[in-house]
Length: 461
Image (cartoon, rainbow, N blue to C red; front, side, top):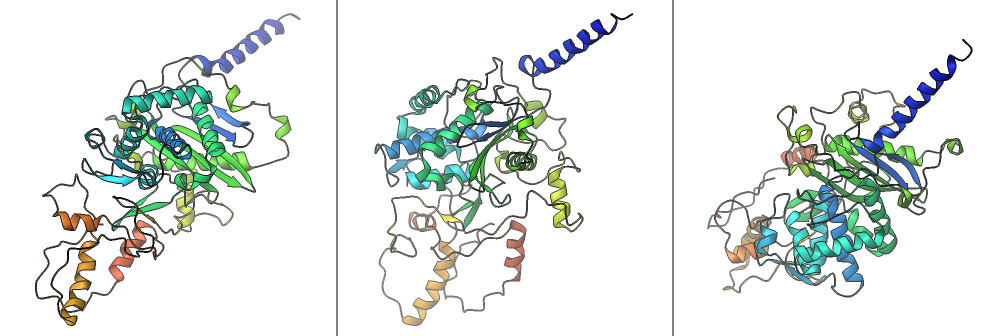
């Protein structure tokens, strides 16, 4: 009998060893993969399925931004260089800006549209400008991956739209994020813009951490049905910057919640960190040779209570699939006054922000407060008629017109004016719900209408 415990202990040890090896040899038990890395040192603070291959979705645009800004830094392009929308760009699936083929815009405006709106068509515009073609740019993406040590990444397009060969991993994306921070610090504004304004249309950043998690300062989200909701995010606290990667979340809300929780875990210092085993650096994490999981049925299948779509990039509100006991739900309850005062929600309400104006065409003269192209010369009206007509014109010109919008094409003169951004004197934009309330509260205009009635319809919100 004294020998009975030995095989029992051996069996238990074998079971523990098998459980420990399970994530390295099979599909992840959870439908997501996460990683927390110190930006400066590359030290891994947390890793779960971090070297498992994954479809990157629109986080691919981080590589597109990286190569575009490298081209600018090496003087192969400038931020004011004009890039042209091609038929290939027009053919891209949403999310997109929807410009017509032949439309030109600056590299600066293209980067802002791609990073905030996550515009797939604009990613192709930049790829063709830098690499000559989508295929040529994909070659540059793969070459950059090899140089940076992103051994699990392969690229075939610049925007992350579904493709079996478009693969990366949380490990590789953290390596790319570190390279961006290290090599391109002077361009940091491009990955933490809260919103852009195109005509009267305000587009918030698809990254729901920006403006809601106080320390968040970048970078990029992504979603396709096969990948789930992804994010590569950065945050800084006390001079210390962390990179968090979350792949495979069930919604934009869950993605933001989980990233905020991981940031808190990384920033917290209990004084007992020396008791935890060292996870090494992100470059030293061992890649797993496997096919990426395909989450299409879970994300977009018929069995999901609220099926997502390939263009669901901007979902940042709680869905029917959000756990009612989660930190995100707790945040909402706290905002409604239903949580104790010491609950400390991680995601607060959206902070007020001033959207950055974007536009098509060449760089505008900074001295022009309207940034509107000059209108054709007409016969000078009387002073009274001119005052009334000016007020009506300002209201009608504010309506944006997308090149692929339904309906008849806009007249050329009107289209040129509607692409102009707002002036620099912007007021902070509040939450969408608050915006509607403010609009409802505005008094109706009583100014006399001009003799000729305008056929311009109010812009949709």
